Image 1 (cartoon, rainbow, N blue to C red):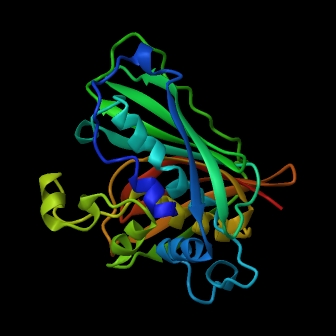
Image 2 (image 1 turned 60 degrees about the vertical axis):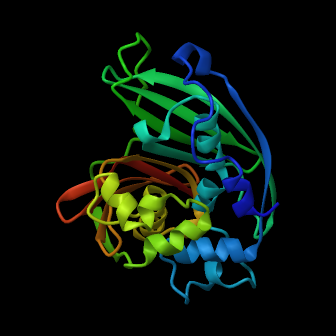
Length: 288
């Protein structure tokens, strides 16, 4: 089974009755073997803005795989959670993303990825479902917001904020997304119509198709690595909250502050378009 077929096999809609929070925690979503090759890894790198001359990530000879490629590989778990009755897609938002790398992703291979509902949190106004994708190489949490579904007496999710020295300087980089960026990124597996179809985008309340949040995050991870004087493949941990949408063609400004840490560095960052934040409460850690 190819990587794209594995992602699509989860389906795009909920086919089971929506479950209560108490029924969701610990729910297994199964295990899938996800296969990819060098072409998939290179396509992903190009889709998140790598240039042709970034041959560490765009040339099969000595190919390094961007760590954030793990996110589309594990995305089937969110679709599987919906199909199992965790939420109705039309009533849900991708609120935040977390990624932890245990080892570098191989240039090509088969990953046995297991999915589960790790936790359900109560913000008061909304419910927050943490969908976990896990394998030997990485773990990822897709945090799904259900507006208006809070107030059930659950716990509020704690925030983790790494310490970055106040004496360190802020560094800002800019990246111009391509008008065709969403059309390219959707080939990595997320074929949702709002990223390509103007009619679907307008029905969802947007004036035109929007960029995938995970694409914005993939771009930001590369920009933060550059600002922190690290290679993108040295990323070991990444966390971000999705605040507002990006349109293909927007200019992304990534502002980060980096401190040295044991055997690496940690960066806190925010991504904005003009004066509007699109990613907030972000951090990344890198190893040497």
